[in-house]
Length: 412
Image (cartoon, rainbow, N blue to C red; front, side, top):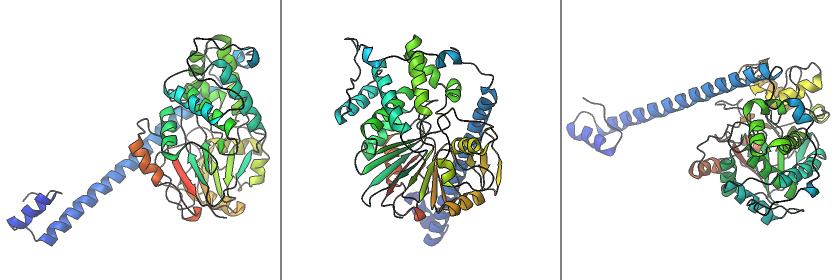
């Protein structure tokens, strides 16, 4: 006798044919449904693991080759690019993109987002002005930024955007643009890989300049000139802005990367960091605060400060105990015992991170974000945002699959 189908017709047929009782038919259907769900979960985990291994392999090759790799235009040409006086730059009459005036206004920021949505390129004058103003704001912030929240405040934490402007605009459509009481924290890797890293970065810088106390940016491992040579951001900038102007813009963007904070602490209880923890004894937040972050991210340097910075941008968690060498070729894979020891030492309740596709978190103490999919759609995003992190972080739900989390009423 053929197995009953999952629809009501199959169930009725089983009963009418007398092959089994109604209760047995319901049990059989339930077993089939549970089996399908289990296979879907298993397949999903295997896909996550495969993506993680491929991503680690690509970045490992990049790290190994970075010391030998040379930009098509030459690294020295980028570093020696001229610095333009933005006041002397003229916006041509035929320019069709957004116009920025300082100080920025809400209307100006919205016009900028709409312009990028319509495929317009921002004028070099405005790009350089954004970089200059954002550089001053970030340079004044601490390496570890403290973010207090009132009980009615909401903070949306966004994982790796990687040049996906459509993802950013979808998130704003669902959670509203930043504003008082509606904070945003972007947890690194804004650029590389995606088709519009320039649009994503300029949008975030404009929001930061307009609302410096409502928008926060952490540095990721791709906010690095060396990574940008390999993964596409340098090529994108120099193809959109030609000649010495393109090299000057790229240089100014790299200067902004070098002053980005490394991590944030929300309500003194939740650490948000792009990569993860370092090997050795658990570091204190004061050690992170003492890092001289205004530099190109170090890799394979020996001193403790450089190691902490490298691991903050590169490390990944593992379900094993202790720490091991990372498959990426930088940072480490830190175990759940390292997570718990770090949280105890610093009186924290939770770590939120980005940087990778990951299926299984460290129990209830470590939440993992995932790389946004290229097919990010409002329908999918709505499910993600409605199931984000809410309430007391000690009872936070699993970090959602598209790298967007929402924290509400976070208490000490």
